Amino acid sequence: MRIALAADHAGYVLKDELAGWLRDAGHDVLDLGTNGPESVDYPEYGARLARAIVAGEAERGIAVCGSGIGISIAVNRFTECRCAQVNEPLSAELARTHNDANVIALGARLIGSDMARACVSAFLDTTFAGGRHQRRVDQLSSLLQDSD
Image 1 (cartoon, rainbow, N blue to C red):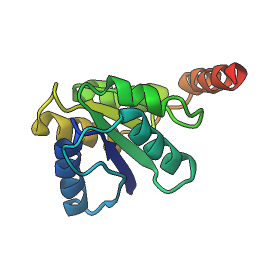
Image 2: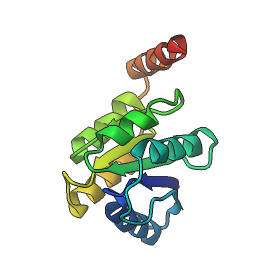
Image 3: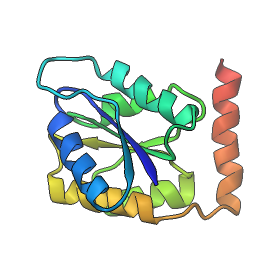
C-alpha cells in the first residue's frame, strides 16, 4: 500500500519512525516532511498530505503534529479527505469501519511509538463496513460540498 506521511516540527521524529517501520513492512512511503526540529506551520503539512490523497499519490495518509488536532483540521479542509485524530487502536479501527477515514492524525506529544504503531496497524488492517455507514459518509461529503 502507498502511504503518505506528513508532520510538523513536533511530529517529525514520530513520522520518521513510522516511515521506517512501514517501509520495513513492505509499504511504499511518500514522506512529505518536515524533516527537522525547525518550527513550521502544521496547516502547510496537513495540506501537503491532503493534496497527495486527492491526487491519488497515496491510498492512505498519516498526519502527525504535537497533539494531532491541528493537522487533522488542516487535512479535513479538503472534501476528499476524512481524517480522524486517534490515540489508541480502537479509534483507528472505528475511523475506518464506520467513517471510511483515509487519513489518521497522531499526537506525538500524547502517544509513544508503540501506541502509534498499534494505531497505524489498526488503521491499515481495517476495511470500511459500508452498509448503513456509507449513507453517513455520503452525508459528510455532501455537507462539505454544500459549504463551499
